[in-house]
Length: 287
Image (cartoon, rainbow, N blue to C red; front, side, top):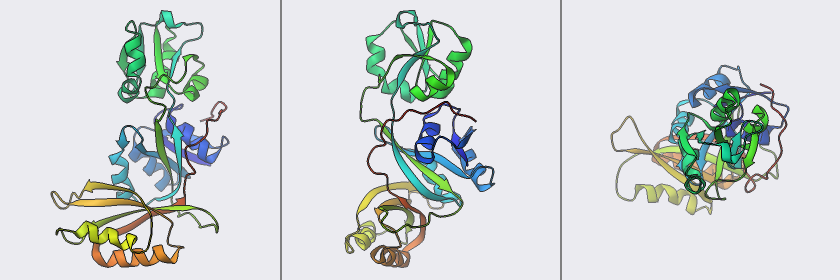
């Protein structure tokens, strides 16, 4: 199986792909999230893996928009613990470092560690795994990176310190994408993602729409609004619910919803993630 992800080898998205789909997959890095969708739609990859939200930084809006504009289905999810580590070339030490490269968000998430080590200058980089690759390539003892331990193993870097992030509650929810929908298996706890646009912008319309689910005791797990580019200052709503159309209550709710909104689409029904993903060791990846 070939799986597309955004970033370079060693990225958290690639690690999440291996958590969900196993170590025997082949992985294809893409420069953009749109490139992930392109590879799967064109059949160059069998699956795509994208981040959709982070427990600290919030939602990744670009990917919400891509889910609507493209024809792929969500077929899985995982909650991956984001553990930042301080990396350096082999033989380096903490005292050698004068600079550390990483994605601006990762640098911000490790701000307490950096404040405690003022001799180390943070240097923004386009990607955490890209920073690890650059540090390995340059092999300078005074230059380090902040990235995952998966990237450290991939590029042969020394792990000087693990878990330097400010918060231990740093998780990213990743989705698996496929050209075909997931086939329901009896007994599987499921989650569904939908998107809809209200048929009219009037007081109480969203309350009325969400009542479709409340009246049937269907759990709403998440709701996200995004601007509708066709109508200034009007919005689309992305909603995650427990269950799927294999459940008669959900099927009736979707039927009812379709009668009171101007646009409705099921983005996918898939096995729900069971809590945060456990830590796991991953062997060296093969591209």
